[in-house]
Every structure is written in C-alpha cells, then in structure tokens.
Image (cartoon, rainbow over all chains, first blue to last red; front, side, top):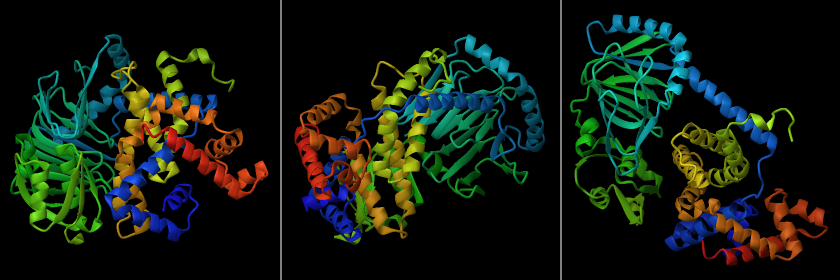
Length: 344
Length: 182
C-alpha cells in the first residue's frame, strides 16, 4: 500500500488505483493519519523553491496601487446604480420620501470628499479592528457611543473618530446593532459583498457571514427600505420583519417570523435551531464552539433540527443529535467528525 | 530587470510587500493548489490574501512572522472554498468529492502550515545538499522546473524507471530527515 500511496501523490496512478487509495484512507483513523502525513510531507518537500520575478513583483505593486484607487472610489462614490443598497430610515411613514431625498444629497456632497480624505489622513486618524474568533462573542462601543454586539467569527473595523459624510464602519459576520439616533449623520455599514447598510438610528440584527449563502437583516425598531437599483424596486421593512437575500440568485424575500428569538437569541447566549438545515447547523456549531466540523457522510446534510441550547457543551449538543437518530459523531482535539447515524 | 519602473519610487510599505510577494507567491499558489486542485482559484485566493494583508497593513505588526500570517490567511480561505466545493459536488462526482474531503482533512492537520517554518526549509536545503548529485538534479527538475518523469528521463538520458527510483529515494531521504516535524 505504501508504494501505491507514493505513486498516488506523484500522480502516477490509474483512476482505479486512485479510488483504492481513497477508500483505504477512509477505512480507519490510522489509515487517515498515514494518508494525511504523506500528503503534507509531499506538500512541504515539493514546495517550489523559487522567487517571483522582478516583473511579477512590479505587476503586483501596480495591483496594490490600483486596489487603493478603487477603495478610494468606493469610499467617495457609493455605487447606487449597481447591486443592492439598503437604507434604514427612522420614520416609517415617510421612509420613501426621505430615502429619495437623502440619496440625492449624499451623491452631491460626495463629490468633494476627495479633499476630505486628504484632510483625514493628515489628522492621523487611527483605525481599530475588533474581531471575535470562533467560540467567542463580544461587544464594541463605537466613537458615537452606538453599541454593537458581535457574535462569534465577526469583525468590525472603524475609525477613532467619525469624520466625513457618514459614520462609516466595515463589518462582517453577525452583529446586533444599537445605533445612536442622528439623522443628519447616518451610519454606513460596508459589507464584504459590496453592499452597504445605511442607518440613522435604530436597532437591528444583521447577519452577513462571508461563507453563508444568504444575508439576513431583522429589524427590531425603526424602518428599513431596500432598493434594487436594477429593477428600481423599493422594498420596505417594518419592525419585526426579516429580510433574506439569497446571495447566489440575488432574490429577496421578506418574512415575519413568529418568534425573533432564533435570530437574536445568540446575544443572550441561546443557540437556537428552528427547522435549521444541517449545513447551517454545522456552520453555526463551528462558530459557536470554535471547532472544525468534518462531515464524513454527505447523506446527513439533508436533515433538519429544531432545538434550543444554552449552556450545553459541544459534545452534549452532538449527543442530543445522536439520541434522536440524526447523526453519529466523534470528537478529537478541536475537530468533530460527523457521520450518518446508520453508518455503523 | 524590467526597466520601466524605477526602484526609487516604492514606499517602504510597498517595498516590504514586494519582498513578501517575491518570497511567497509561487510557494503559496502551489500550497493552495495542492489542496484545492484548482490552479486558477488558488491564484485568486493567494492574490486576495495578499490584498487582505495590504488593507490591514496599518494594524499589522511587521515584527511578527508575516509569512506565517499570510499562510494562515490562505489556509482559512482554502478551507472555506473546500467546504463550498465539497457541498457543490454532492451527488455530482463522488470521487472528486472524496478527493477534496481528504484534502480538507489534510489541510486541517497542523503539519499543513509548516511551509513558512524557516528551520524546516533549512533542513530541506541541507538534505538536498547532502544528496548524491544525480538524485538531487532529478528531484529539483521535478520540483522546481515542474518537468514530468519522461521529460527528465529524456534530458538525463536515463530510463523513466531510473527517474522514478531517484525521486522516491530523494523523498525517502527527506522523510527521514524531517521526521522531527511531521
């Protein structure tokens, strides 16, 4: 077998032999260990010992400069004409009117923001980044005393002082925002997928993990409007309504969840699944407990679960899922391996 | 030398990143590709990781091992990509999916991040220096010049079996000398 493995990593095997090696690796933990060791030994020893050329390095520096320019354009001119744009206005009844007015005000004023940027730089503005690793939650107080609770695996990037047109922050992951009211000075939350959320003073839960298929925004108080600039359609959210954006299809749906606890319960330490699909459950367990989850049998991925946990450990959660015949599992170091309940 | 850009024009940040890029770019693309099995996606992820570091340069501590940080960033991005691809291959191509699951398991192992370990790369260099010349030449042609076994055989005027033998011997020697880490 050892000879076959070496041939396998050298890419010198037939499809049939490759299949045999893979099946062998999955047979037992010991085989897997040998496989992993051989694979990583191969990666380390076969690492090319060559530098990038001067011209490649110069092209890279050009890329960095282009990248910086693009960032500046993004800051000075939010691109309203492409993709999605969410605006949150505090007065529900006149949300539509306020939105259209503030939009035109923003884009006019932004024209001279270039100078502003230089001004900011010369003041030596410092930036802070607060991140919560998987398994940890946190709370951040922004310079305007707005409060953001961060769920595991989230990060927020903000200046020491808000200057310019907006209270601008960058955000990824899941956060419960309590934004201080200031309708003349909106908060702009830049997300990794290029979308921005505009807020004047309201409370909401925003979940925009990069590795999630959808983005969700649950409004607690105030009002939200979301503009699809392609179709020029304006979607309005009322308190307790939840907006879901499917990132792959760009489809938006609005639901009114009977219970908002499954969405915001994390803030109080609740881990709640409400007919949640297995891929979502496992992703959330990874974040919640700061572990890696490996799935051995993809057949488990079609299952769903409704359950509520508070102070349970990972093994207690997995044990419950085992007791109700959902999965089989093993935990070793910080990796949980999930297999089908019927695999044994 | 590409004459167009004059060296003097770099800021100190740019100079630092230029060096980082020269040292790590090819290594990092190779590294990502070993687990993703997708060269274009690997290049993209490495490029993205460099840009992430560049954007965060104000808050990075340059006294720390930035290479290790870069590799960690790439590793995380690869794990995300793998997870997505494994899901996508569900009921599509089970062999390809199994292959990626094995890669995922390997990447999750601590030994996968050893490529930025200076002592380890020194040990690899030393082992190569102590190899018989012919064995080393064949190994380096395969590793750094990415020549296939038949190409090396033709170049060296030996049989493919001989090339195979020399490379497996070279790997055995490396395996023995790196036992401490892996």
